Length: 150
Image 1 (cartoon, rainbow, N blue to C red):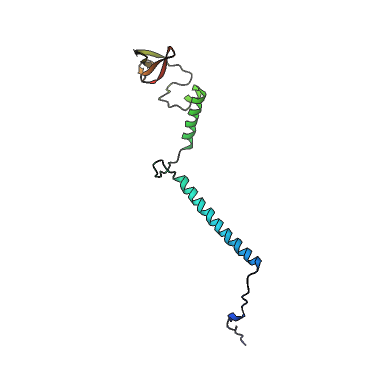
Image 2: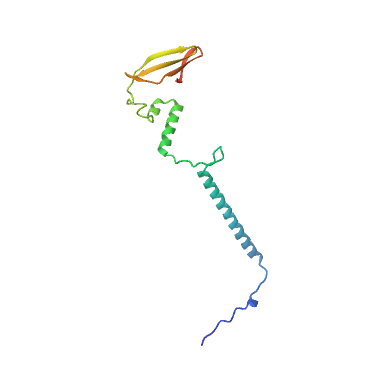
């Protein structure tokens, strides 16, 4: 004996109005979906704009990744300059700039001094034969001051 299912009759389905509870559930679900879409869009925009910051010219430029050790050396050097700490600065200066081991003094001698009014230049020799780039002199407050390379 076999029993067959009767064909579907849509007239037997109740089509009454929604209860207030069902409306709140439907509205809450719709609001949640829209909020998640908005949050997702905001996150995508925030992530992509931070990877490609806009330049003053209006274009965008991808920033190259920075080696964290290079950034640390740069910060250590900047901190040493701010603290006027020569010993700390020497720790991150190239060997070519600081060839002598710490504590070994290298003599500097004045090779020449040239003065023209209230400015001038000094040429120094490091050690026995290394000529240092000329240094600029400026007369300030009644005395001479070293003001960087000439």
